Image 1 (cartoon, rainbow, N blue to C red):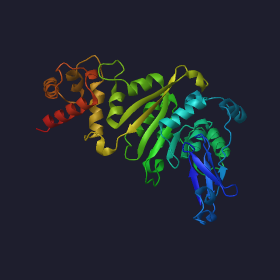
Image 2 (cartoon, rainbow, N blue to C red):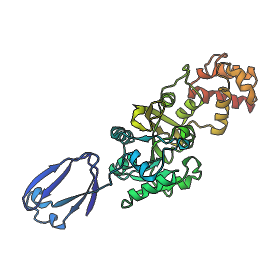
Image 3 (cartoon, rainbow, N blue to C red):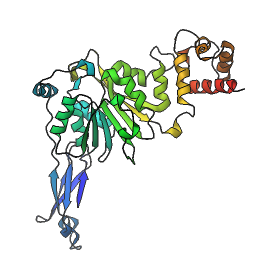
Image 4 (cartoon, one colour):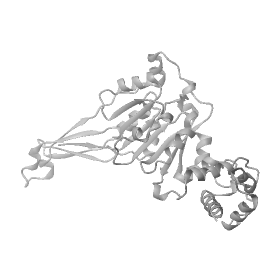
Length: 344
């Protein structure tokens, strides 16, 4: 019998010959394949220590090179066009894995694995990893590095253009998790694709620019950073700021600091029951000019000022409200109220 055990749980091993129990604790980095002999089931009158026989075999993963070493070996430099800033710090890897609550057997999609620093941490946690890497050289290097580990599948593709859902989640019975050091230049596009997938994805844990992280997780009505993406994030998920990541912990160092954020995605039955296309059309029109009143901005999608003013009053808002004054829930109410008036 073979059992995979994540080392965050104490593992007990009993030696038959010695007749005593040895308890061994492992860090999350050490995962074991435990083999138990059928002989352990006999002699029921003996103590558990005398009956249970096991042998621990480490599941060895290759040492991950520093990004600088991998790039030098491949004869290439970081590509700004791909937003390549490679993670250097192991504590950030540990914090990312912890934020995703990665458990043995979880299926994790990693976007932009680069040189495999975070990939190794996910594999060490016992996850099955599908790594989507656009850079052909890095994708090839990753496949070679982890060639003896079938729990990793490397896909050489552009994640943002990876359109078909069935390619992202082939034959999955359980929800997957997405964990990534996102290239800063695809953050918005990637999140727009991922956030609506709450029926298939449970958690999205990503590293993004610090300013963007604060906008996604902390911006609220009245803040200068409150934007359409703030409404979208809360429409589809519950966001959480995990930690800041100093720019010195990347290679090459970007111009700004980063941060880890987690989105707990809402399944479709918990998302506001409105047509998303129509709803976000209203959101886009509402924010076209943040300083103008909503009753003026919404004229661009066919609502006259009087109708908007009355709808705002009906949902408990001032008729002079501006885009940054409404919560996501108030925007849902405004949308529904305007639709009902349109249908009269």
